[in-house]
Length: 271
Ligand SMILES: Nc1nc(=O)c2c([nH]1)NC[C@@H]1CN(c3ccc(C(=O)N[C@@H](CCC(=O)O)C(=O)O)cc3)CN21
Ligand SMILES: CC(C)C(=O)C(=O)O
Ligand SMILES: [Mg+2]
Image (cartoon, rainbow, N blue to C red; front, side):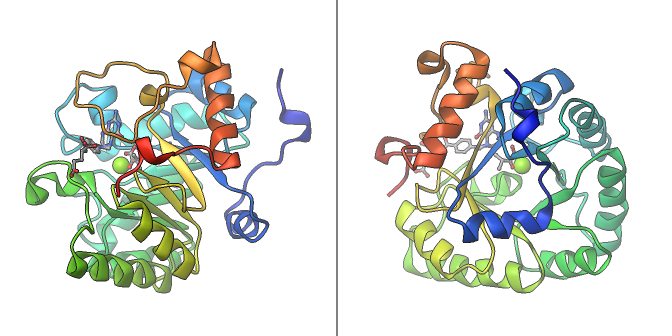
């Protein structure tokens, strides 16, 4: 059952090595120890303790109500369950407003068991990325459809469709890598644009609703298991439980589909 024997524990430098070797990265969100064990047993590479927990665990309409304390609590739970996957803690809304504030939260995430922290956006966040990386904290950037921008965007809308927005996104992707980010999540971006950004990116990209041309993929765990969370289902969501037959089977089917490049297909991408 368990693949622990032949499985390595992921470190941050290995992300770039995987990309170099042409091995696609598998990532899923997870919020508790029991599911983390299953993800680890199946060999999922990266676990995101995402602020999506505000919607799928806490039942809110957006990710905005999530607090630092919530991410610390769930990161500690996940860390007790998973030892091989690289664990990434998501800064909740407002907790990364200044470099100093972000650093204080990041220290708590690392001490709870995260190996990397994730923040949304570029702009003033570039200074925060540099600040954290200078202080030995690995950073994952997140661009495109950034759910914490829901009020400004007027909903969860695909980003980078107009020429000017695409140009801005390309520039931001280069800027976050230049600031020191080691990984980049691209969310809700036309597949062609995400593939172009990936080709130009010095760091690995992980897509969600960003087509098959990224270096890896991420989904919310509840979506992969076909759980109705009471919210509108994004186009990129696929229920792998049907074909997988069991929870571990669904996770394996997802990992295989990501590694082979079969997921996402056109039906689960934006153009
Ligand atoms: N369960 C769940 N899955 C997620 O992927 C997810 C969350 N929750 N919560 C936080 C954010 C919110 N996300 C979302 C939510 C809705 C759409 C959505 O409905 N998008 C439209 C795009 C319309 C357009 O601009 O063309 C779609 O039809 O897919 C996208 C991402 C992604 N994240
Ligand atoms: C969907 C991923 C990228 C995320 O940020 C989250 O789960 O919070
Ligand atoms: Mg998030």
